[in-house]
Image (cartoon, rainbow, N blue to C red; front, side, top):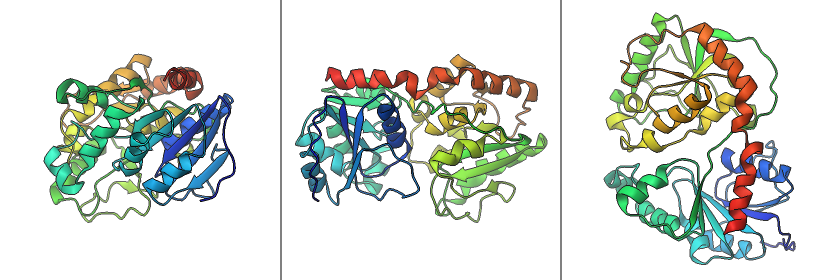
Length: 361
């Protein structure tokens, strides 16, 4: 743990994140493109094939080591990312080496059944609450912190900024579109899930078959093993690196965002308020691919993507076994609208909102 460089420029941010996930990379690239220096302290290894935007990277093995490393810099702000694991974040926020922004990827408070959370992730809710309430600023990819404030009595010391994933908005190669296939990228049930968790997938297969459509699935987790109860009709692909995902998605007719109440329900730790406040990064991947997004029950996502005309909206109360009856002409219109207008949701257009937020703390 030896670092000689002392970052002292005005436009410098130190990212601290156990895992280097897509959000870390996207924001890092956007900051570098407008002249900011971005330094990364991380716990997990970064793939050597991954193109990253950081002027310096250093690994830590523990929260204490992350804190000691962070003290060797003098940035404008420290931006700490966490995803269902708050040891490092809580150390940085408690012993503040400088101004600290906390970025909670998926908020647990109010979104997860508290009894299940305590059974499966003991202490996480308390640690998360401490981080949310004591950081100098919160960078929110969703409206989940709003629910915790209004309904759970959370009181935030710092300012908040709503800053979802946004799109890279980089040109992609034109490929032939398979109008008989739709795609889903993201988390899906594993082989440890109970058999009833896979009933919605079977209903979806039946629904798509009536339209002559096939569902292709790209799991978020590497090494995903096909569960015994997973329908054979679903084409399961290997996980694709973040920088290649949009190109892979662009060949499909549409991207399907699985309806929460059908695909989570009683087999999930999430509560019913989750889809009304959450935001998925995979929807922005679809926009990067110029692919229309089929949205049913995700409230804030339905509003945002519907506002720009980028989504194919289906009724919230649609029966999961009914055919989607997708209108290909409408899908083509949405695809063209995305191609021409997705820059409205590009990182390059919004990144200075984040730097102004940094500088205001």
